[in-house]
Length: 338
Image (cartoon, rainbow, N blue to C red; front, side, top):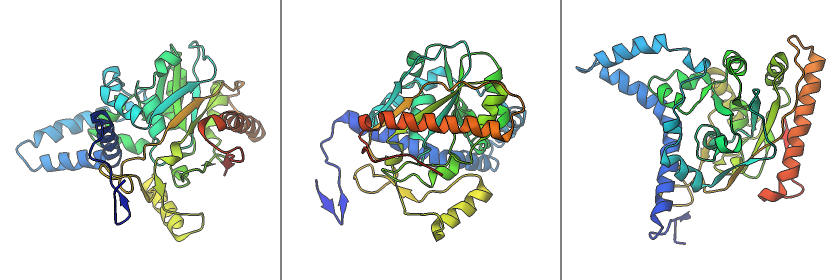
């Protein structure tokens, strides 16, 4: 490999398919980081042109449709099955692994860990059809739950909802778990705060104080399904930001006011393997565990919630321990629960 000033350059002769995979990974990253603001600025710009009527009409639609992301969204299987998502899957590659069958005659709450910097595994597995969720779990429909703010960006919200994504509010989750059967909303339990802990080779989960998902499952009597994505934290390198450091305090302050975290990270580039915004080409293996049965209790006590939460944490840890060696982790490596 050729290096210039410490930057490892990609070879010129690389198969076209790998080039396409890299381009799609770049497209996904740019969409994640910039599309929301780009769409907003586009509509503002159109307000000052002869096409001003477009944002005016869209505003009417936006107000009318504002809560759609909390009412099941607006998925489009054609977009979920685009060929580009297969290139995105093969770039890493991403694999979805089933451990048990899940009968489609009920609903499930999938709990995804870890968040990673950008939830690449969660998106590929549950917001596209690329890894065969419908074939592995026939009769189930996945809904990736994300921050409500993602659906406040005009135009971007329309595109994102086609993936089956919905907002992660309590109202949205309850809607999905009470309307019909075979629904499998996927909640990234650690949230934005956990993204700040996404360092390669480490699995620090923001879970000890996250109990709202348990309370919701108890209220509705819905099984909890632990999902662990091995390799999720290896896709980007984040600047060291231990708790209590100036950078971490700054990030937590910004998250408090913005609603989302701002990890200081880098990946690889399009033409180099050292620095850029494209995720590193590392395998991501997402393992879906067995369901944890939850007895229906519309008004559980704190002790009852704590008991189910402890059972969930134990099941998640067991899922990790049972699979870690198969996916390249050391025997001494364990989940850190924060």
